[in-house]
Amino acid sequence: MLKRIRQSDYENLWNRLARNLIYDAKQVLLYCGVKVPDRKSNGSIVDYSDIVKRITRGTDYGAIYDLTSKRIHFDPNYIQNIVDQAYRFDFPIIDRSFGPGGIAGFIHSGENDSYELKDPDLNHILKQAMLVQKYEIPFSFVCARQLGKYEIEQFSVTSNIFSGPKFFFISTESGVEEAEKQIRNGHYIIVHHTIFHSPLTLSYRESIDVFIRCVERQIPVMLTTQPFSGQNGPMTPYGIALLAFAEFLAGMAIAYSINPETKVINGAYPTMCTPGKKPSLKIGSVVHNFVNYLVAYTSRLLDIASIQSGCTIEGDVHKNELLNTDYQTVRAIILWDAVLEGWHMIRHCYGFLGDLALFSFVKAENDIAALHHIQSLDDSGITALLANHVRLNRDIQEAERIYRKPTLLFEREKEILLNVIIETIENFGGDFGSHDHTLKNIPSEWF
View (tube, rainbow, N blue to C red):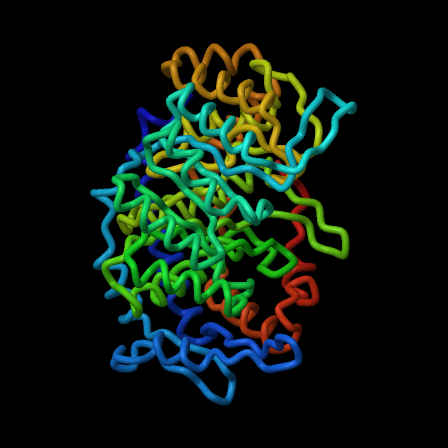
């Protein structure tokens, strides 16, 4: 049943889809571009003019700022030139690597419905580093965004335990200096940044300043873009992948304009959720995993280092349903490891609850055990596992059907999506829930 022995039959379909995504993303950046916001801080307008000059200067009209619309437009040939110079052969994390997604906003402790939430502290960072080291995970990932005062300490705590590549979030000049120091001491450090608010709007000035300092000093950067379907991104799977990838390419172009030698990792995170005032995230669905896979596959085609989200679940409670962990996690691990090909790194694959807001060390160890078990199986072993679980077998068969014919899920909507994105930004303030395209494309089934 499994696809590995028949990969070449479907590779051309995915290649064509990825090429479409690349072309369409360039069109989005040409005709829609990136908005320079009117922001206020302490009653004063925040000035982005020097950033605009750095992005556009010396590009020979590759990047042009429109004073009327306050948008930076990128020429497709300029984007292609940047992509052509990207390479990842020297990146120290091999293909098909599963790893952590960082410490979430709260630590989840307890079982079933009786649990408590704790604020993360240095002990939790230490514990996660030990987890990565113990189970020989290819990379470590620490997010100290919620920790604040531990921005510097997270480096040494993790580096003293784990010697492999490490992802960190930083937001201050001190964090930049510590990352640079760690690199000088022989550690491979990647710092992750969010420089856009979807759709296609520059983020807070402070965030961009820190990003620029990292790029100037040639510290490897991961660019996270996270549009939500039916909210600040198109409702359709292809549409949300397109916006996330276009924002990544724009960020890559900004990095290139500052220092073309800096390594840039694609951390685009297209997030499937329901539309409306009270959206429900669908990050455990097969559709969500496929959308992230499309972005990962496209990056692989362009030889860009890429880390996407997958294998997480919906809900606040950890349930031992299958292989001593959650059903959605096992289903997604099998999907990525036994069906999908051509991806680089997966994050959020263990320990997460509450739509990534909570991290459970109990669930993490259960997830890792399931992950390693599935990776140890050959095709016959996977087939036997599926044969013993009717629901799992049905879902994986449906996922393989989509893999064989991705147009079942990814309709390109040629020329429609570009207009939808532009109209939503210009007429609805970036709220895709107000566009009739969202209402027409609410899916009847979430896998």
